[in-house]
Structure formats: structure tokens, C-alpha cells
Image 1: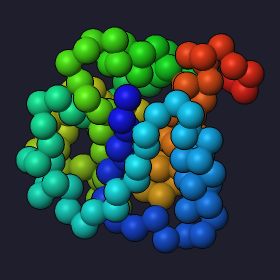
Image 2 (image 1 turned 45 degrees about the horizontal axis):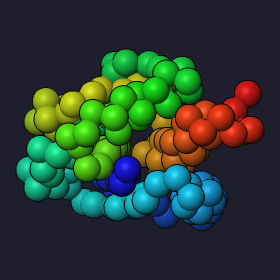
Image 3 (image 1 turned 120 degrees about the horizontal axis):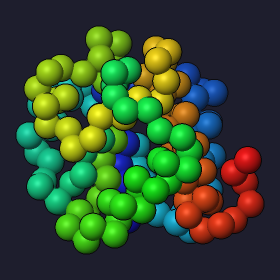
Image 4 (image 1 turned 90 degrees about the horizontal axis):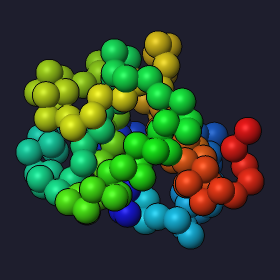
Amino acid sequence: MNIDIILEGKLKEPYFKAGVDEFKKRLTPYSNISVCEISNMDDFVPNLKNTDYKITLEIDGKMLSSAEFANKIKEIENDGFYNRIVFLIGGSTGLSDFVKKSSDFSFSMSKLTFLHQEACMILTEQIYRAFKILKNEPYHK
């Protein structure tokens, strides 16, 4: 399964970039993953395909445990219709209603508000954790 994380804004802090790069490297055996920095999510979303499963990160979205998140990824993969999972992370002003309405699943990592760079790093780690759970490999605790 191909996974893209679309980040509105830049991943500029070296410590967040290093964290994202580390988990992208660890994900290599499990999935093709990329992080794309864009300037305007509203202009980007119309270019997505019906075969892209769109997950928006929203504070009011559904919260999942790590195991439930892993099962969500497995469910999307097993569906057979989708070619990739696209995670959409808003910038400092969040996501517009237009982007939220285009979502297939609204996901909340916490009731806390994170910097978009921080959310990207945490999400990348959680995707890695999900694959470790799905493969029954040690890592998840």
C-alpha cells in the first residue's frame, strides 16, 4: 500500500525532519511512504483520485488506539478499491471545511493541538507502529 502524508507548510525544524526521515526509513520494508509539503491544501485536494483513501487529521475526528489504527490501515488495504492512503495535515489555521468534507475518514491523534510538523512526525511513527502490529513484530507495547 502506498501512503502519502500531505503537509500544508514546511517540515523545517531539523529535529522533526530527522524523526520523519527515521520512520520513513524504517517503513521501507512495509510500504512506500512519502511526505509532500504543499502551500495550499484547497488547491491540492481536487487533484486526488477516487482510489485515494483520504484521511484528514482533525481535533474533532475519531480517536483510535494504536491497535485500532493498525486495523484501520489493514481494512483500507483489504478493501481492494484504494491504491493509496493519503493523510492530510493542515497548517497553522487547520483544514478548511472543503478539505474536511472531501475526507473518507476524520482522524484525531489527540484532543491536544500539535504543530503541523510535530503531527507529521507523530503520524509517521504511528504508521510504522501500525505495520509492526500488523506483522506481529516486536516494537508495539
